[in-house]
Length: 206
Image (cartoon, rainbow, N blue to C red; front, side, top):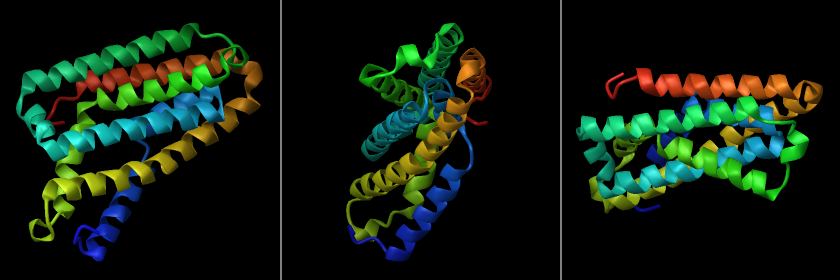
Protein backbone atom coordinates (compact mmCIF):
# COMPACT_ATOMS: atom_id res chain seq x y z
CA UNK A 1 0.00 0.00 0.00
CA UNK A 2 1.20 3.52 -0.88
CA UNK A 3 4.10 1.92 -2.69
CA UNK A 4 5.70 0.74 0.55
CA UNK A 5 7.73 -2.45 0.54
CA UNK A 6 5.62 -5.20 2.18
CA UNK A 7 8.73 -6.43 4.00
CA UNK A 8 9.23 -2.97 5.51
CA UNK A 9 5.59 -2.81 6.58
CA UNK A 10 5.88 -6.27 8.16
CA UNK A 11 9.05 -5.20 9.97
CA UNK A 12 7.29 -2.08 11.23
CA UNK A 13 4.34 -4.12 12.49
CA UNK A 14 6.68 -6.51 14.25
CA UNK A 15 8.56 -3.67 15.90
CA UNK A 16 5.30 -1.99 16.91
CA UNK A 17 3.87 -5.16 18.42
CA UNK A 18 7.02 -5.82 20.42
CA UNK A 19 7.09 -2.25 21.69
CA UNK A 20 3.42 -2.34 22.66
CA UNK A 21 3.86 -5.66 24.45
CA UNK A 22 6.50 -4.03 26.64
CA UNK A 23 4.65 -2.45 29.59
CA UNK A 24 4.99 1.32 29.34
CA UNK A 25 2.99 4.38 30.31
CA UNK A 26 0.00 3.48 28.10
CA UNK A 27 -0.16 -0.08 29.39
CA UNK A 28 0.17 1.11 32.99
CA UNK A 29 -2.66 3.59 32.48
CA UNK A 30 -5.00 1.01 30.91
CA UNK A 31 -4.13 -1.47 33.65
CA UNK A 32 -4.89 1.04 36.38
CA UNK A 33 -8.17 1.93 34.64
CA UNK A 34 -9.12 -1.74 34.46
CA UNK A 35 -8.29 -2.36 38.10
CA UNK A 36 -10.42 0.52 39.32
CA UNK A 37 -13.28 0.39 36.81
CA UNK A 38 -13.47 -3.11 35.36
CA UNK A 39 -12.74 -4.77 32.03
CA UNK A 40 -14.77 -2.39 29.87
CA UNK A 41 -13.12 0.57 31.54
CA UNK A 42 -9.68 -0.85 30.76
CA UNK A 43 -10.59 -1.36 27.10
CA UNK A 44 -12.10 2.13 26.88
CA UNK A 45 -8.91 3.65 28.28
CA UNK A 46 -6.92 1.76 25.63
CA UNK A 47 -9.21 3.17 22.93
CA UNK A 48 -8.54 6.69 24.17
CA UNK A 49 -4.81 6.02 24.15
CA UNK A 50 -5.03 4.90 20.52
CA UNK A 51 -6.93 8.06 19.57
CA UNK A 52 -4.13 10.02 21.19
CA UNK A 53 -1.54 8.12 19.16
CA UNK A 54 -3.45 9.05 16.00
CA UNK A 55 -3.25 12.73 16.97
CA UNK A 56 0.52 12.42 17.43
CA UNK A 57 0.71 10.69 14.05
CA UNK A 58 -1.14 13.53 12.31
CA UNK A 59 1.11 16.08 14.02
CA UNK A 60 4.17 14.13 12.92
CA UNK A 61 2.89 14.01 9.33
CA UNK A 62 2.40 17.78 9.41
CA UNK A 63 5.85 18.33 10.87
CA UNK A 64 4.47 19.89 14.05
CA UNK A 65 5.87 17.22 16.35
CA UNK A 66 9.36 18.02 15.13
CA UNK A 67 8.80 21.64 16.11
CA UNK A 68 7.70 20.52 19.57
CA UNK A 69 10.84 18.44 19.98
CA UNK A 70 12.98 21.40 18.89
CA UNK A 71 11.49 23.72 21.52
CA UNK A 72 12.46 22.84 25.12
CA UNK A 73 9.91 25.36 26.43
CA UNK A 74 7.02 23.82 24.46
CA UNK A 75 8.13 20.31 25.36
CA UNK A 76 8.25 21.15 29.07
CA UNK A 77 4.88 22.90 28.91
CA UNK A 78 3.23 19.76 27.51
CA UNK A 79 5.15 17.55 29.93
CA UNK A 80 4.05 19.51 33.00
CA UNK A 81 0.46 19.70 31.76
CA UNK A 82 0.44 15.93 31.38
CA UNK A 83 1.90 15.44 34.86
CA UNK A 84 -0.70 17.78 36.37
CA UNK A 85 -3.50 15.86 34.67
CA UNK A 86 -2.17 12.52 35.93
CA UNK A 87 -1.90 13.96 39.43
CA UNK A 88 -5.55 15.04 39.14
CA UNK A 89 -6.50 11.47 38.15
CA UNK A 90 -4.51 10.12 41.10
CA UNK A 91 -6.51 12.27 43.52
CA UNK A 92 -9.79 11.26 41.85
CA UNK A 93 -8.92 7.56 42.05
CA UNK A 94 -7.86 7.87 45.69
CA UNK A 95 -11.22 9.40 46.61
CA UNK A 96 -13.34 7.20 44.30
CA UNK A 97 -16.16 5.03 45.53
CA UNK A 98 -16.96 1.41 44.62
CA UNK A 99 -17.04 0.53 40.89
CA UNK A 100 -20.77 -0.29 41.06
CA UNK A 101 -21.52 3.38 41.58
CA UNK A 102 -19.57 4.41 38.50
CA UNK A 103 -20.68 2.04 35.73
CA UNK A 104 -22.36 2.98 32.50
CA UNK A 105 -21.79 4.76 29.21
CA UNK A 106 -20.74 7.98 30.92
CA UNK A 107 -17.97 6.17 32.78
CA UNK A 108 -16.74 4.58 29.55
CA UNK A 109 -16.68 7.97 27.82
CA UNK A 110 -14.65 9.34 30.71
CA UNK A 111 -12.21 6.45 30.41
CA UNK A 112 -11.78 7.13 26.67
CA UNK A 113 -11.27 10.83 27.33
CA UNK A 114 -8.76 10.19 30.08
CA UNK A 115 -6.78 7.77 27.94
CA UNK A 116 -6.80 10.28 25.11
CA UNK A 117 -5.59 13.20 27.22
CA UNK A 118 -2.96 11.10 28.98
CA UNK A 119 -1.47 10.09 25.65
CA UNK A 120 -1.76 13.48 23.92
CA UNK A 121 -0.16 15.26 26.88
CA UNK A 122 2.81 12.88 26.90
CA UNK A 123 5.55 14.44 24.74
CA UNK A 124 7.46 11.17 24.97
CA UNK A 125 4.86 9.68 22.63
CA UNK A 126 5.45 12.45 20.10
CA UNK A 127 9.21 11.91 20.37
CA UNK A 128 8.80 8.17 19.89
CA UNK A 129 6.59 8.54 16.80
CA UNK A 130 8.89 11.14 15.25
CA UNK A 131 11.86 8.83 15.82
CA UNK A 132 10.26 5.56 14.70
CA UNK A 133 7.90 6.15 11.79
CA UNK A 134 10.27 7.94 9.37
CA UNK A 135 12.65 4.97 9.54
CA UNK A 136 10.10 2.87 7.66
CA UNK A 137 9.16 5.41 5.00
CA UNK A 138 10.62 5.57 1.49
CA UNK A 139 10.63 8.91 -0.39
CA UNK A 140 10.61 7.07 -3.70
CA UNK A 141 7.33 5.38 -2.69
CA UNK A 142 5.38 8.64 -2.65
CA UNK A 143 4.36 11.33 -0.21
CA UNK A 144 6.14 10.74 3.09
CA UNK A 145 3.32 12.36 5.07
CA UNK A 146 0.85 9.83 3.67
CA UNK A 147 3.18 6.97 4.60
CA UNK A 148 3.49 8.32 8.13
CA UNK A 149 -0.30 8.47 8.45
CA UNK A 150 -0.63 4.91 7.18
CA UNK A 151 2.05 3.50 9.46
CA UNK A 152 0.80 5.50 12.42
CA UNK A 153 -2.69 4.15 11.84
CA UNK A 154 -1.37 0.59 11.87
CA UNK A 155 0.55 1.29 15.06
CA UNK A 156 -2.54 2.75 16.75
CA UNK A 157 -4.72 -0.24 15.77
CA UNK A 158 -2.27 -2.92 16.90
CA UNK A 159 -1.51 -0.88 20.02
CA UNK A 160 -5.20 -0.74 20.90
CA UNK A 161 -5.65 -4.51 20.92
CA UNK A 162 -2.52 -5.10 22.97
CA UNK A 163 -3.14 -2.30 25.45
CA UNK A 164 -6.81 -3.28 25.73
CA UNK A 165 -5.66 -6.82 26.50
CA UNK A 166 -3.76 -5.55 29.50
CA UNK A 167 -6.68 -3.38 30.57
CA UNK A 168 -9.22 -6.20 30.26
CA UNK A 169 -6.96 -8.63 32.12
CA UNK A 170 -6.54 -6.10 34.92
CA UNK A 171 -10.30 -5.57 34.95
CA UNK A 172 -10.87 -9.31 35.32
CA UNK A 173 -8.44 -9.38 38.24
CA UNK A 174 -10.10 -6.35 39.79
CA UNK A 175 -13.49 -8.02 39.38
CA UNK A 176 -12.33 -10.93 41.51
CA UNK A 177 -11.20 -8.48 44.17
CA UNK A 178 -14.37 -6.38 44.12
CA UNK A 179 -14.61 -6.65 47.91
CA UNK A 180 -11.35 -4.74 48.02
CA UNK A 181 -12.51 -1.92 45.73
CA UNK A 182 -10.93 0.70 47.95
CA UNK A 183 -7.56 -1.02 47.68
CA UNK A 184 -7.91 -1.26 43.87
CA UNK A 185 -8.63 2.46 43.70
CA UNK A 186 -5.60 3.22 45.87
CA UNK A 187 -3.39 1.06 43.64
CA UNK A 188 -4.72 2.90 40.57
CA UNK A 189 -4.01 6.22 42.27
CA UNK A 190 -0.46 5.08 42.94
CA UNK A 191 0.04 4.15 39.29
CA UNK A 192 -1.23 7.54 38.12
CA UNK A 193 1.09 9.24 40.60
CA UNK A 194 4.08 7.22 39.37
CA UNK A 195 3.26 8.15 35.78
CA UNK A 196 3.08 11.82 36.77
CA UNK A 197 6.46 11.58 38.51
CA UNK A 198 7.89 9.84 35.46
CA UNK A 199 6.86 12.74 33.25
CA UNK A 200 8.23 15.32 35.68
CA UNK A 201 11.59 13.64 36.21
CA UNK A 202 12.34 12.64 32.58
CA UNK A 203 13.63 15.31 30.25
CA UNK A 204 13.35 15.35 26.46
CA UNK A 205 16.71 13.61 26.20
CA UNK A 206 15.97 10.93 28.80
